[in-house]
Image 1 (cartoon, rainbow, N blue to C red):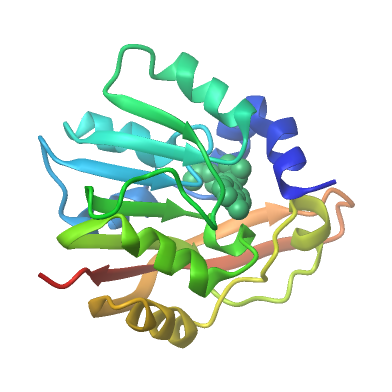
Image 2 (spheres, helix red, strand yellow):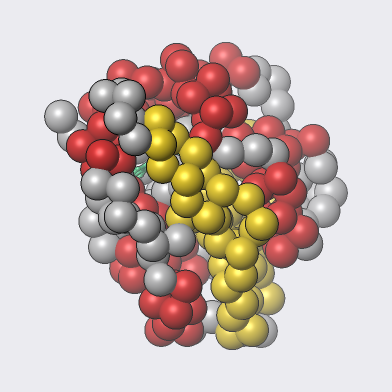
Length: 208
Ligand SMILES: C[S@@+](CC[C@H](N)C(=O)[O-])C[C@H]1O[C@@H](n2cnc3c(N)ncnc32)[C@H](O)[C@@H]1O
């Protein structure tokens, strides 16, 4: 099964699954890092069923939400009917968002699913206006192999130094990668293992 097939399959249950994995404190850290406010436009990449999008809309921010999974987009279409959100089907390598068009880009628990993380960061930076911010929340490096086989994770988290280097290679400045103070918790379906993995928030600014 591909990652897309997996997320199509779990889309209807994703909100329940996500609640068990991590808390709303993660997105609060992301919003604080981005400093977004009413009247701004943000992109939520690998948006899933709209965890990040939901909080942005509550803050008066307009959203372009992108995901590879049609089933996830259907979940959002129902949940956010009438809201200021533009739902787009897209892949990490070529995201359907114009150059220099958004004030902030968010990606929560997306990076560890993409084939080429450094390239994916460059693609997200491309859509930032001058002064805009890229904020990624994801997993620190770990060794829970079952997350590869059971949840289709491509990478077992990341070293913060690597993430920081990829942000700088993408041309972002004032790069900061730090712990959120929260962990992601997931049980193996075999019942034999529980993964508890710390979460980082990475933020960088597109130069003026
Ligand atoms: C772990 S979920 C996180 C969803 C959401 N951001 C959240 O916090 O609940 C990862 C999401 O990224 C999407 N995704 C994974 N790889 C992708 C890719 N290469 N291109 C676009 N979307 C991708 C999946 O379809 C899925 O909805």
